[in-house]
Amino acid sequence: MTILGTLYKFNWNSSEDCEKWAQKLAKVITEIILHDSVMHIWLQGNLGAGKTTFIRYLLKALGHQGKVKSPSYSLCEPYEIEVGQYSFAIHHFDLYRMRHAREWEDSGFKDLLTSPGINLIEWPEKAENTLPTPCLQISIEYLNENQRFGTFIASNLLGQKIINTFSNGS
Image 1 (cartoon, rainbow, N blue to C red):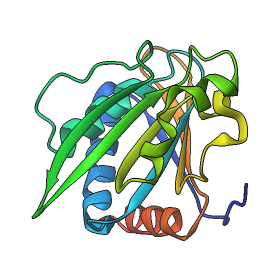
Image 2: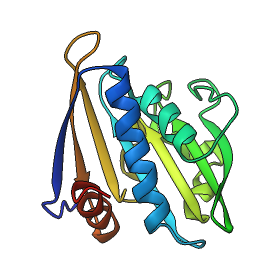
Image 3: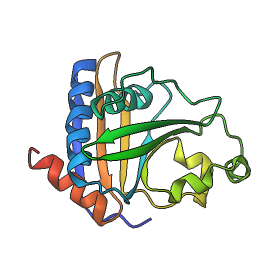
Image 4: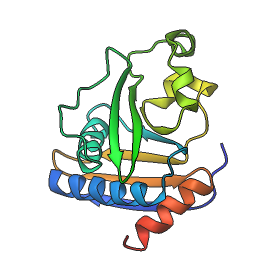
């Protein structure tokens, strides 16, 4: 996978920091995404690093008002978000329980990845090379109960735009 060299490092010292970062990313996403855009964001990190928590905060910041369930058993939880005059599909995938990439291909969810919207994918490495290139990879490392260290990495021009807008204080 090509990495464009755009990297943004972060430290969270509390769940409030995690929420603030999710709010800031939500603002950037809503400034960038167009009604027919497809955005893939991968979230990587060990079990308990905070991937699902970050996604919950992100969905809330994007305007979702209901409960955010972990899709660890269903593989995918769909959401519909209103951003300005547009409605966006957001698919939250959790591939942790997959044992083989073939399970991903057999799941029937692959078609969702080409539809306009945002795809948030936890444990993308479980699908091996069957996923499209993400625009943004978010890596979260657990340091202790409250602290996390991580990076945002751009994998294409859209990801680079997200990081540049994010780092410029959008």
